[in-house]
Image 1: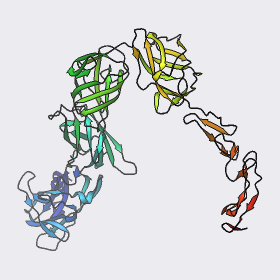
Image 2: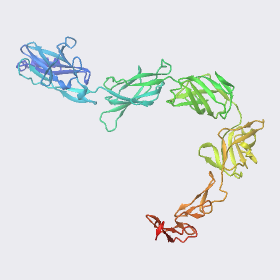
Image 3: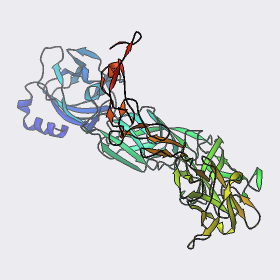
Length: 552
């Protein structure tokens, strides 16, 4: 009910309303009250004679830390008087004057405590206590209807490199999603600020098994370069659906994007330059890349790429690198072909911009892997367990293999008796037959080129099986890594042992080593005798007959 309505009622029903002071609820600002924030209610009083009234609100509902928690005025813009008299569970504004024969506006400024109203929107009624001053007369006054919104509370930020309750090493591009957890964000239309930058996209996601609670996903908070040239900590503020900001001091750290400034190695081994050339395509020469903002040591996801595009796609990756500091990467393993390739560094998904730093790789012969026998479990580029006599052909895969005239194993072990290019890809695939080697050896390959050069590809090896010289018989399998027999031990094929798997395990007998000697819980022959076990045994126990073992 507005003041204008009350005036109309007074004029129309003056004889009724003149019985005693009457107080009506008029309006409230804002429409949705936020706990912990100032609100203002309008009351309208009607009286036929001059008097005064005491007005109170429940103490437990008020934020007593606010200054003031409750105040009143006849004017909504000035002259507010603080109410501080506790009485019967209410905070009282005493002796509010009411001139006679008039309609009087009474404005109450108040602040509700977040302790009572929790973390979700609440529709309720704020009780009013109104008494005629100096008397025990309590007026019947309806309460103030309220919709109370919570103060948003930010509890944690995650999404980049997380150290609960904050996250670090976020790319300055602002495209890595931030996940914001807390209370009172509202169902939609929230805003997230990282520093002074408002996120372009904020999605409210309902929390499972929670009513009216949401977490936020924010994207598009791109930042300018941090002033310290490495990173900066920026506060995160959430503005809720109801337009209220969080106050907790949580932050994210933003990295400056990586920059590539120079390179060394190959034809320029020590000094940083803009271009180097004649680098080995098979990674024999380390390449050092210089720049800035390559991420905190051991904390960031870093990729070094040769020939990649502006989004970090394509190109050749550095397979292994070291990071002496945040401005240096040393690539020690790579397989690259090409000329004048741009160098890019990617830190936590952020790609270094285009630069004039280039690397060119020699168009030499290089081997990427060999195959044909068993895969080497510790090296995908190698093959193993090849017959030492060279009976299994080995396939060599690489580039510019048309220059190869012969292939041999290191240490003068042996060489391919025939070397045949693949008909479809002669420059990339060679089939080597007759390569011999010492059993148990894991040997590098030596490629002799038509130019007279010898290439020994790193980490490309051929391993030769040891073999079991005496054989493993019917009941064993040769372990080609160790050269020893692995004997059967099962109820399907028997329980065997010995160098050639031709003997029964203790306690088993018969031609198939499947029959067991008599035994108890104490052991074979109750531990008081010996069993006739073995292939030629009969499984009979011979009882002990001695002073040491007893007479059984």
